[in-house]
Image (cartoon, rainbow, N blue to C red; front, side, top):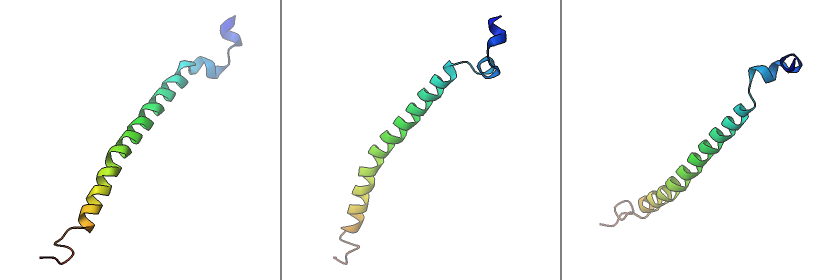
Length: 60
């Protein structure tokens, strides 16, 4: 009798599927944040070194 009163969406998708998507989104967001924290300072250093490179500035 309980199965009859359930909506079709509840029967197809269990409730814990939302928790799985939340965990996946948190993991992806963490990867993006950690990657940006790792790459942004390195990129800034590379750009700084390219801009201040003595050969590019015409110094011998």
